[in-house]
Length: 343
Image (cartoon, rainbow, N blue to C red; front, side, top):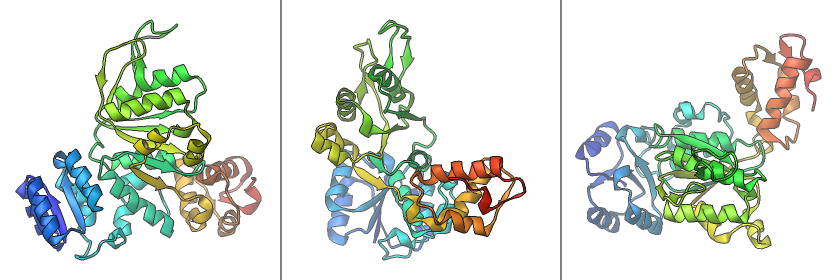
């Protein structure tokens, strides 16, 4: 049974007319609790304006699958799901893969099909996401897809790499500055302000100093910042997405990463598969890379087979550099052959 939690009866009418799901409708929290206790719920579609902290605590406690939406049409990819199914495997993958947000997340392997479904689920809520993956697996691309599929898609998206060794520059990039805060400082907004109302992607969070970690923890709990050199509180509302290729649990054990921050940032953990675990996606990846780089050359089947024998420690990023070098520097014809591949 599927439950719709909304204060708009027109949402329920839309679902009932556009699907054959077994539906129930709740317009307030008391009604939602009663329905869940009496009938249970396999999934809950919830209007974003009703998804307050009380609701989030309740569904996390009950372990429901829930999907937030701003406009009821946003849940259309789920409407082909037969009643009684609880697994998103039942959603037609072709309809998911054709979404514009997934144009750079190609691949027909089981790992990529699973990843796209997970991204679609994650995008429907506002919980903090921690993306884990080796270098070159596409963490930045996935973060952008989460934003583009979310109810905040029309709001700002900003990203910030936290691995800069200059702590002052990292702090200025995050929180902004007021004129005179330090030599050369001007009045400038940081990425928290710039992404207010939208999504903020903080990459390489495992490389941050303990001081920056403390400040990130404070923002995650208080939802306000101060520009460097100012005591004025600025309220921020960001959907937070974090990423790292580091082992944070090991860093906690070593004392270089705050355990309390770790539990703040990992409401949802999304693990990206390395390329060596989805070698069957290499043909599609090669076509995507050549198209994105506007390289009008083909690639032979024997070259594809050769590429599928490599380990690819640098994952998709390494494949892209290898293929572009082969096409531009080494290939003298219109078809990339094995002799053109240089690792």
